[in-house]
Amino acid sequence: MDTFYTGTSEGSHRAGWHFLQLPGPTNIPQRILNATAVPAIDHRGEDFAELALGLFDGVRKVFKTRGEVFMFPSSGTGAWEAAIVNTLSPGDGVLMFDSGQFSYLWIEMAKRFGLNVDVVDTNWRCGPDPEMIATKLADDKSHDIKAVMVVHNETSTGVTARIEEIRAAMNSANHPALLFVDTISSLGCMDYRHDEWGVDVSIGGSQKGLMLPPGLSFNAVSEKAVEASKTAKMPRCYWDWQWMRENNATGFFPYTPAIQLLYGLRESISMLGEEGLENVFKRHHRLGTIARAAVEAWGLDTVCENPKEHSNSVTAVLVPAGHDADAFRKIVLEKFNMALGGGLNRYAGKIFRIGHMGHCNDLMLASSLTGVEAGLSDAGIPHISGGARVGQSLMASGNTDSKAA
Image 1 (tube, helix red, strand yellow):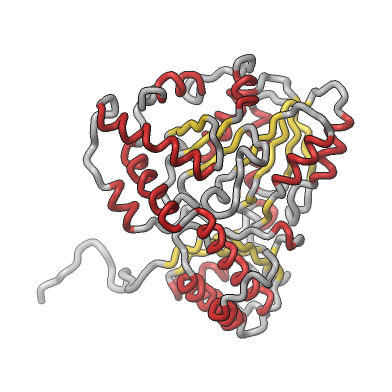
Image 2: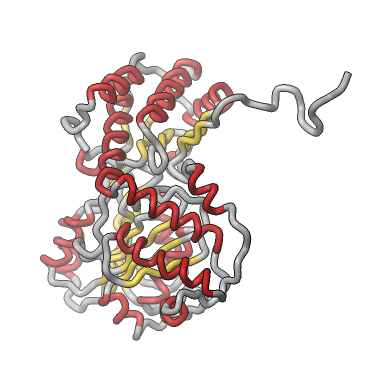
C-alpha cells in the first residue's frame, strides 16, 4: 500500500485551528503574515527608506505621542534596556514595584546596571499605589530618585496600573523623576496616552496588541527624557538613541533592521487604523468583561482584586487550593488543541491565563471559554457549570458597558 506521509506518527495531525489563547505571542492575522512574506531588499536603498519613514508617524499614533519613537530589532526586554541606558547613570535611584513577573524581571535588570533600586513589594494582586508613590517622592527631598518605573499591564497577573493617577501623584509631589512605563501587553489593546499622561519613556513590543511576530520593540520618549539622555553615563551602543536618531532621519538604521517585520508593522498600523483605535479599545474592553463574567460564574477568582485595575487583554484565574493549574492546561491542550498561559514565579501551578488581545473577536473568545469549562470538568477542578454560557449571553446582549472594566 502506498504511504502518503513520512517522518511522523499516525495521530500526530490535528484537524482544525490551534487556539492560541496566550497573553503573547498572539494570533498573527493572515494579512500580516502576507505582508511579511516579501523578498529581502536593500536596507540602504530608497525603497526601504520610504517604508521606514512612513512607519514613524503611524507608531506615534498608536502611542498617542508627537515625540520621538525609536524602533529596535529585539524583544521588549531590549526596549527596557534602551530606556535605562539612555537616561540613567550608575548609582541613580529608581522607584520600582514588584507587582508581577515582568516587573520583577525589570527590577533585576535595573540592579544589574548598578542602579539604586527602591523596591515596593506587593501581593501581585494589585498595581502600584499612586498615593504611596506621592509619599515616597515627597520624602525624597534631595531628589535621589531619578525615575519611577511601572508596568502598565502586568501580563503575569492581569493587573493594570493606573498610569494617569501615578503621573498626577508624581506632579503633586513636585518631583522631577522620569516616568517609565512598560506597555508591552497594553499597547494596541487598551487606551494609552504617552503625551497626555506625561510619560517620559514608553516601552513597547510587537508580539501582542500589534499582532506581529516577536522581534520588534519600541521606545516612545518625551523631551525631558531626551534631555536626560544628554548627561546619562550608562555605556550604550546598540540601544543608543542618538545613533538611531542620526540614521532614522533619512529612513535608515545604524545596523541591519528587521525588514520583514517592518513590512508587517505597516500592515498592523493599517489594520488598527481601519478598525479605529478607539474601537480596538472597546473590543478589548468587551472581551475582558466577557471573560471575567465567565470566571465569576464558574465561582473562581481572578488574580486582580481591584475592579479598577482589571486587564482587558488577559484574565488570570486562580484555581482552588490543592489543584494543579498546569495539569489543567495540559488537558486543555491535548484534548482541545488550545494553549492557555500558565502561572509564573510565585503563581506557578496556581493560575491559568486566558489571553484575549490582538487579533481576537467574540466568537474566538466564546470557543475558548467553552474549552476552558470543559477542561475544568475533565481536570476535576471545582467550579459551577455554565460560565461559558454566561459569557455568551453577555456577548449576545452587547451589555458589557454595565460591567466593571
